[in-house]
Image 1: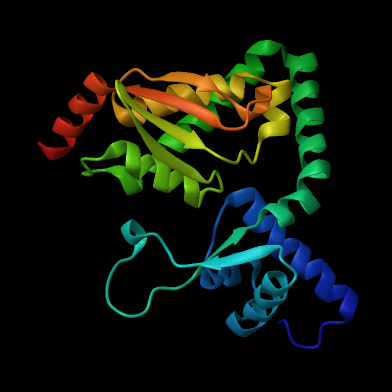
Image 2: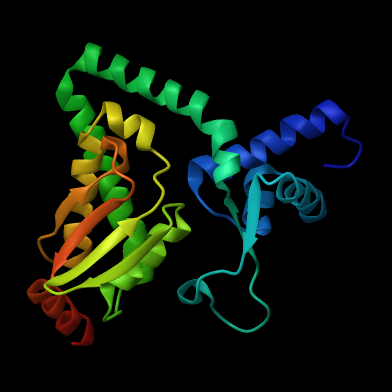
Length: 225
């Protein structure tokens, strides 16, 4: 299907590939080929071009996602440079859509949307975090795979989950309900109360969530049981 594309078709196809990753997170060539209806060879050609342009980056998959034998497929993720090319117009559209929802259906519609997104995070994260004792580390790995560049920093009284990038920062700046619901999702995933200390959406350099040491010990014990 990819063969014989004109240069303008190539541009449109690569835009579609990049937007698929921007909107749905990291993906393999096989998954993109199936979703977009292109041959594996065709989709790889477009992925290689996007990597060469600095829009995408090919990474080894997280260990938790590798199953079976054989060489694992690389995962393609959006680079910061790639996000800059797409995010502004995409974020403006998202903000406009949420403002329309709020005007037509009230503030409760925004809260409902934020909670629905949080539930989706819980569902997806649970697939890679279940049965793991170090849940904070597992959550950070999951968030990194979703484009948040997350890490865990040990503190005297607990630990901090730090998200060094936020794909929805521009939207969350207008609608803080997204950050509030995300914090609730983290609490449910970790099985304990957490405290959001800072967010990129509010002008901080890093989104920081504190997990108390006593709570972390409880989640560790639960994971080992």
